[in-house]
Image: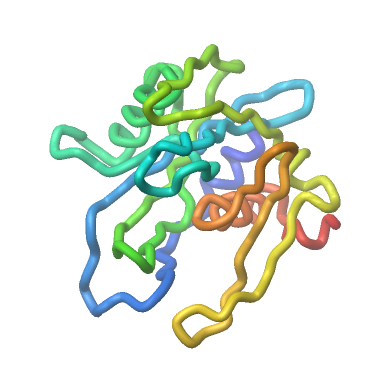
Length: 198
């Protein structure tokens, strides 16, 4: 249940995770993503998007709604909910903030990404923006914890061996920063490493 997740997140203090080699003090643009959660018969469920193939960056990848913080955004939360509204039509007023996950400094652009977690009272009626979203994906926490869905590999990157996370959903594979966020979310709310559930 989302209420249980909110209780766990209320006790968590996020940290900053650096992916790749970043020059000291160098951070690019700030970005925020929204991990929206609502309850269904299958338990807590979150919203992901698949990016269209025509996009210049990360074409076809699965991600949380979100993007760069604009000068007009009053906060990271405002940026994340604005992006979610633009991408999938989620009403910002329908989302209540309940927590934050570890921030990421990406290795390629040195962008600081903040994952914000919000509660939605009921399953929202969403509409994908064709310019930004190919499909809206609703996935339950229970599905993410299903044996065989999660896997990880060891990749040699910039001279270091790193764990790369994957979630094999029906018709899609989630990996990269989104998979790292999902993995951390499951560790925090389920109290387990998803690998141990397989």
